[in-house]
Structures are given as C-alpha cells and as structure tokens.
Image 1 (cartoon, rainbow, N blue to C red):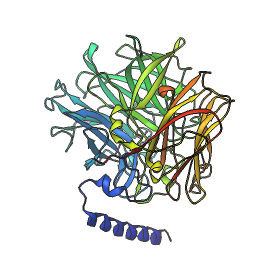
Image 2: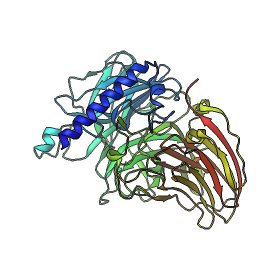
Image 3: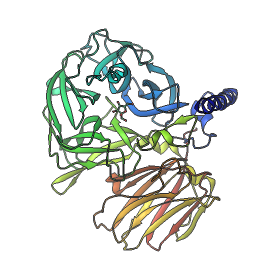
Image 4: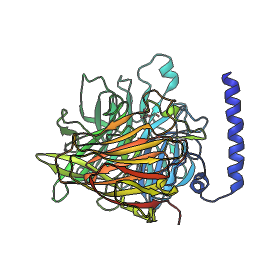
Length: 501
Ligand code: FRU
C-alpha cells in the first residue's frame, strides 16, 4: 500500500517535473507561481522538504540563504543544506545543494560567516559554515552524544564547500540536544562567539579562529521542560536613542502562544562571553503559529539586522497539503528595539527592500462591506490604521467556495487575531482550523497595521512591528474578495505584490 502510494507520488512528480522543465523559464520562482499554493514572492524550495533557514550571510553584494533540506522526499529526512541567493531580498535564485550528509552525520542547522581576517587560515574572505553534525547511527545505538558542531569552508563565494578535516570542532559534553550554532565576530574582544542551543538553555563559546572553542557562559531556564533550538544573539539599537541592547533570540519547541513551536527572545546585555538578562522576561517574536527558527543575516551592510523564519510549525509541517515541495520562508524582516516603560520590545517590520514588490494600488472602498473583488487580493499588501474603537474590525478574504480567512482587532479585548478556521483545507491536522490571538495591546488611539498575503500565508505587523502574527492556510481556491465587517474607523490601502519586473 505504502509502496504503491510512493510509486504513484513519484510518477506524478516526474510528470510535473517534465512539464515544468518544458516551460524552460530561467527564473525557477517564475515557473512556480502557476502551481497551486506556490507563493509568488516568498522563498520556497523548488521541490521536496525544507525547514529552518541556515547560514544566513551577506557576502560580496549577495544575500545567502542556506536551509535545512531533504532532496529525496517531501517530509523530513537526512538533512542537507540547500542554498539560494539574492541581491535584493526580493528575487531568489536556487543554487546547488551546499552541504551533504557524511560519515559524521546529517547536516543540521547552523550559521555562516565571512572570515575577513582569515583567522581560520582557509583564505581571506573564506565563507565558513558552522553547523551541527547529527549522527543518526549513534542516536539509534542509544548514545546521548550524537550531536556535535563542525565547520566547512568555501573559497568560491559559497558555491562549493570543503569540510574541515579536524571536525568536530565542539564535542558533545553529554547533552542529547546540543545544536544549531550561530556564530558572529565580537569586534571589541577580537574573537568569534558561538551561541548554541543545549536542551533548556543556550551555551556560549568563544574562539580566536573558528576551530578551537572554549565555553564562556550559559543562559537559560533549567527545569523548564521545553526544548530550545536555533538561538541567535544580536545587538540592536533602541530606536530614538543612542542606546544598544543585546537580544537573545531562541526558538522554543513547545507551547508557543497559539500552540506548538515558536520564536521567543530575551533583552539584556552581553560582555563578549555570556548573555545577561532576566530569564523570567521571555517574550514572543511572533504570536502566530508559523514563524519558527527565525535567525538573522550575518555581516549585513549598514547598521541593519535582517531576519528570516521558517513559516511553519512542527505540529503539522510534514502534513501540509503541498506535495511537490513543503514549506516556505517568511518575508525578510528588519529587527530593532523600542522602549516600553523600563523594558524593551523587539519590533520586526518588512525589510525596506520589499517596497519593490508593490505593483500598483488596488481600487478599494474603505466603508464597511465589500472593499474589493479582485484576483490580486490573494497576493497583496493591505495597510493602514484603525482609529481607536471599542468595536471589532474584521477583514475577511473569501473565495467562491465559501471559504474565508479573517483577521482584525477585537475592540473590547484589545487583541488582534487571525482566524483560519474556515480558510480551506485543514483535515491534515486536527486543530489547524483555529483562531489565533495576539496579546492585549495598550490602549492607544491609533493602530497602524500592515498585512502581507501570498497564496498560503498572512503576516500581520501591528503598531510598527511591536506585535507580529504569521499564519499559513490552504484555501482550495485563491481568495478574490476582500470585505470589512464592523463599523470602526479604518484607513486602508491595498497594493498588488509580486517579484517580477
Ligand atoms: C529546528 C530543528 C533544529 C535542527 C533542525 C533539524 O526546526 O529541530 O534544532 O537542527 O531542525 O532539521
């Protein structure tokens, strides 16, 4: 039965591939747009399984996006690093697979840096990937030290990598979950720093040369039963001041605000060795269900911090109804900090580069009722502001199948929400059809909002990015109508979005 299903799947896949090859477009993303559920401007692998973004690094005018990839199936398996590049964060080009599993194990998540000072001796400006080797054989044999950190280097701008002969560079000290190294250069100390997830905490290591690492500290929540993954440590400016704070981002595998996996953060300080912050003040970078493993680009020009997340949730990522490929990345987002009383909030906004996606404004009404009937709403940006009201403001996107997706603001509870309970296909996971709430917002008069829609995803940014919700959905036909329910005072503009010239 399973074999038959597999053969059928492979047969369909080969027809599909032949058809796509026959189209003979240069830009694979352009070929893909016609496929059901394929987003127009979000990154997806051309085919097969993808999870976390890895090795985000800017080198020589190019943004590199490596990612957890299994080229032999549309579910998770022996991990490779897939690779894509972009000059503008808007158009992505698929590149050959960068890292393959080897005798030390699968290639799990990690990061990449450009070694401008040639500290490792691989060559000036060598690109160095730092990743977890996950040794499946050892795990199956009952070992608990099957994850360790290794490096590989590229001297041709990330096209080909050579694994370092001295791997692993960080051995496992006896912790089952010991992975996802994120590395950056700490200029004041003239050393590299590695942030590593170690079950319920983050460990910090330093190195002069990317090859020898010494543990320098740890931060975490011993006793909390939740698993931390894919950490990152970034120095962010507090907007409107000269102050900088450090933010430890960490993904957490259980009990995110709307269930399953989510990306969290702590605001604090870093002395080059360890992060200091209040472990009780853990915040969520995203209140939706679908932004996991969010990490930042290394060595971005200017004082900018750009991040990307995997737009799915481990609760159902392997069951979503796309078959040729599985999973999408979020839009690239710019991170910064704003003051919030004595505290700080990390804000995320769409990267400014995404302005280039806007291909004209849609004619819309801003009165309650039908706002627009237009095939373009499916791939659009809706932005404006609500002026404070105790009423509910609900936006509804719908199609001719009676399916609809709603998002909006509940005046009485002061919470934003996304409701995908009637948005289409959901039987693949019990609980997928659900309504998700953000936190209670302060009682401000105006509520600016910005929403990015792209075939199967909605990314909602509120109050200049202080509250973000990212959700995926699978309508059986594209949404073509936009309506507004409720009388609140609303400003609204809608832009057509795509990444074609
Ligand atoms: C997070 C994660 C990482 C791991 C990778 C394996 O989604 O579980 O911790 O390195 O996926 O694919």
